[in-house]
Every structure is written in structure tokens, then in C-alpha cells.
Image (cartoon, rainbow, N blue to C red; front, side):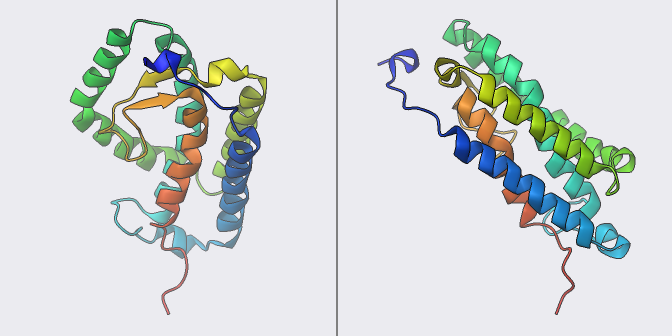
Length: 183
């Protein structure tokens, strides 16, 4: 059975929207409660400060907004095109990880704690609207992904999985924040 022949089940859009909105609410609470000293503190397991990591978490929503059109196009092309594209992206993982790191350092300077909440709100609003307007059959479209770029990228992901991805990314990095005072 080819991926296009797989039986698909209705996407639980409400669960995806709840996940996205849960991230929004959590980010708002974190930003409201964080002190400047806590935001400058190093995170756990990354080279970022808490503020830089928070921006990186928000950046995950922005990235997905850019991935959606790509998935829509690549999913309509012959399978070898998507597999080749994913292999090419995997081959570029070292510069990707450098840009990912540096981009979040710089992004946190522009969209600092005072501005990143609005950026997150706007991005999530756009994702929710897009998800609600996407026909069910399109949500089952799939494309290969560069699995070396992120632990939550699967070898092949549906459009629905891409909509759900930023909540997984957010939760992963949420565990690395060191905003609470050590006891």
C-alpha cells in the first residue's frame, strides 16, 4: 500500500487547537511571571538563556507557518522529489543548527519578553485559522522531512502532523527552562 492509499481518519482539529492555545496560555503566564534575572539565566541543556529559549519556542510556530505551503506543494510531487529534498536538508544539518542557534539569539533581541507574546498570539491565530479552513483530505497529504533537524520530525509527516508539531516542540523546550528559583 502506498502512502497515498493509506486509510485516513478524521483529524482531531480540536486537539491540535487546544495544544496550540495551551502553549499560548503557558507562554503568557511564563512571560508575566519571569523576572529580568530569570530571563537572563542559562537554560538547562541548551546554550541559550531562558529569554532566547522562549523566543526559540515561539519561533517554532513561525516556522510551521512557512512549512505549510511547502508540504502542500511537495506532497503533490513524485515521491522521489520529496525524499531527495529531505536528504538534501539532512545533509545541511550543521549550518541549519548554527543558524537555528544564532537566529534565536538575535530574535530574542528584537522580539524580547515584552514583544514575543504578541508574536506568538499572531502566529497561533494564523495557524488555527489555517487549520480550520484546510479541507480534511489535504490534512492527510504527506511529505518526507529531514529527521536530523528536530527530534519531532518524522521521516514522513502529514500536514495535520505539521500543524501539531509546534506544541510538541514547545513542550520539549519548556522542560529546559530554568525560570523557577532553585530551592
